Length: 350
Image 1 (spheres, rainbow, N blue to C red):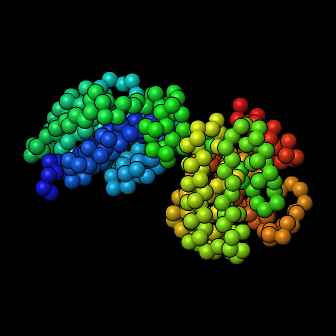
Image 2 (image 1 turned 90 degrees about the vertical axis):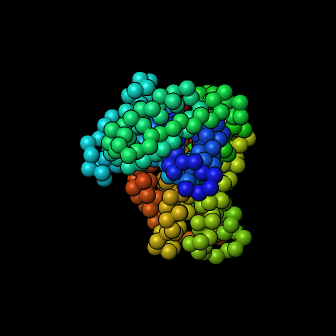
Image 3 (image 1 turned 60 degrees about the horizontal axis):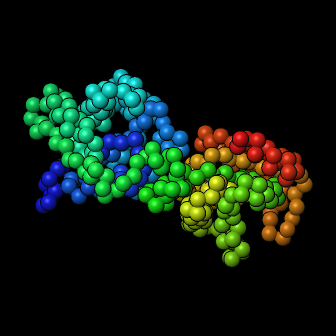
């Protein structure tokens, strides 16, 4: 064991709904005391705007060196299939302490194969949790040296914040969460569509109707600077910048952020122009929005001197539609005039 590190494997368990600075301080404390740290998150039911997919991204973004496992029923079933064990039900959030402890012990032993020797919590239940894990591990392996509880900031003096408070009033607590996480607390609408399909016009009109922040299409801005087809590396940069601008727009605490395109549009260009995208671009294209809107190409193609042609628009639309379905991303198709499209989106949002 490295000098100054008292534990080989530390465990942090939480809902992380959302991940806030108190959780981060807990994980950082574990990192300072352990050779390796693992984080486990589950919540049943899940909290609004804090589903498993979001929590998974938050943990990987903030702690790329920590192995994090974020469970919902589907992910638990998948892990059990891999290990060849009979799946169990994820406990409800209000289940008794012993039920939660037994579930985590079973998960660590049978599914994740984590031989932890320390658990880090800020809660009064930590001692009992560590004792339960110690007994479970010793029952399976008499040589196991047990699990200790490391209590971190139980009074919340260092990081006075609770997930329930953040969920109730995200704007008030936005300085207690990472900007990346806070952006997911703000309603986000994405407008997709091929060239000359009314995407930008709709995004602007919708932002005005909602009193929302408008995030323009960065790919268009970038292309106008260089006036040539973009390489795969440049497309990846465009998608990353698009997401960064969405995150920045959310920090002013608007009621909503309307995004004129998303990384899925950049992925369409990568597929149609290069045949194969990078893995990071595919991952970015799975970014979720409260509502994804796909503009139908239901009016004649209009050439403004920068667009390709109607055949390209059709290819864009078809590829976008296929990707949305493949990624399992729900979306709303809109058609007709700008006013009609705005009305269709507003009806869906209410």
